[in-house]
Length: 195
Image 1: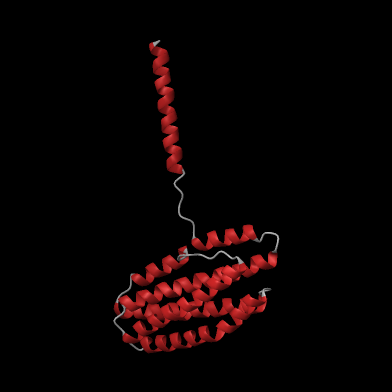
Image 2: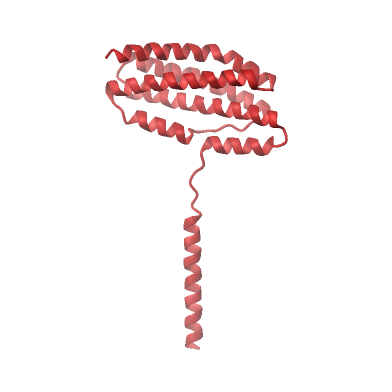
């Protein structure tokens, strides 16, 4: 009887250890918000390739907006250069407006959008946040030039390739504003590179 009782305790103990180890293994790493949105759109529009492609364009643009807003906020709080602070505010204001437009478009088309920074966006934010003084300002300006070039490329690609006319029109209308941001960012970078 003692052996049977002991065997039962050993089996029960082993079972608890297995349950504990499995629960530790099941701790999931938070998924990238852009991937979550892409997966959701893929599931919704699996049989309509053109709609899936259009949703991808909008997801990419939404991710860019989120990054520009967060980097702009950081520039406003961390920089001591009035021009960098001013450009940071412009980024927050203008990309918040763009994000609102993208959100309304996505809602009308039943597209899912990311709601927070992507893993890449978080990494860029972290790299910028590690800088201080003039190094911060120069890194911010570099990121704004690179980021806006990518944004323009993405919006032009959307304007050319989207099948949904509303998505196409929105993208076409957004190129000018992003180009103005790029030119401003280049001037800011030029000014800071002299320091």
